[in-house]
Image (cartoon, rainbow, N blue to C red; front, side):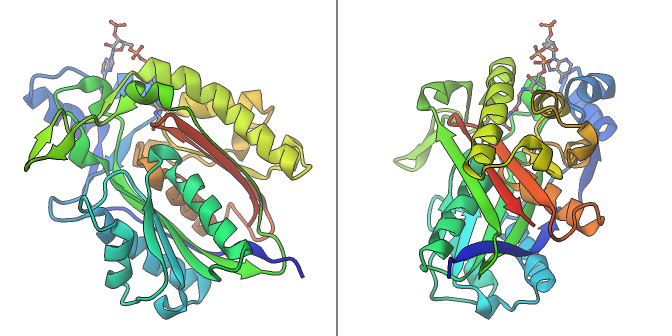
Length: 325
Ligand code: UT7
């Protein structure tokens, strides 16, 4: 019998501190930076984001999201034999946020590791977990996207500091004799490192270079729209399906204009796109599982629906996962 993997539960967690655009505009104005709710809404679709308290880490947010996903799946932490955390803002240089999170859930023994593919992290992590389940290396995985991007924002740069937020989303992915994950398509092109990066590194007890996010927004925008279409088409082709088979498109939540362009290129109605960027901002690797969980819990996404998940971001990385929920 063919072995597949299937999502059996979703969960998410947002830190309680919520900043509307008006709140952030006021904070930035106090630092002499000029921006506005109108600019942010018109150019990005973002209306609010959440920022974690200074002592809260990615593994804290991720552990809470994981507990909720486990509850939804009807599983205990002790059932889990693989933990993968997609994050670019881990608690420490090492060990991984996944190991720290594993211990917060009170479990041990199965492999636990982080995946660093920035905003594509969740589709990378889901694909790795799917492969490990299909090859028998694991049977019940927690796949988590967790970020505290507020830590790496340059609050003297209005072109980036209004875009990002903190949060975590998680799924339980289990071995199944029915699919599940139907196809994945992952890519990277390292020649674009410079258009979206945090270039600093720890060396000799100091941070060498800037530890803050820098982005050429228009360059990222242009690349993102093209690759989101091609990755979706490639995943559909692998599964011998067409865009008409997709019930819900869950793209990385970076900018509503990118999401609108992607839907248009895929000839999909925007009604079929899950949108949380307005309330979460860009939460990098957490954005897709956060959006997925919101849509599952609101009743939009139902068992048996066909979902296209798509990530794009620093690296440059991009990818898509097509699945039956
Ligand atoms: O998560 C990984 C993937 N990341 C993304 O997908 C992000 C992709 N990029 C974007 O979403 C958009 O490029 C941004 C939202 C970052 C920027 O939007 P844009 O329409 O590309 O604007 P722009 O960078 O071309 O800037 C337009 C104008 C500039 O002023 P001038 O030169 O036309 O006078 C900027 O200085 O908007 C100005 N501007 C702002 N004004 C008010 C830039 N940021 C702000 C701001 N408030 N916060």
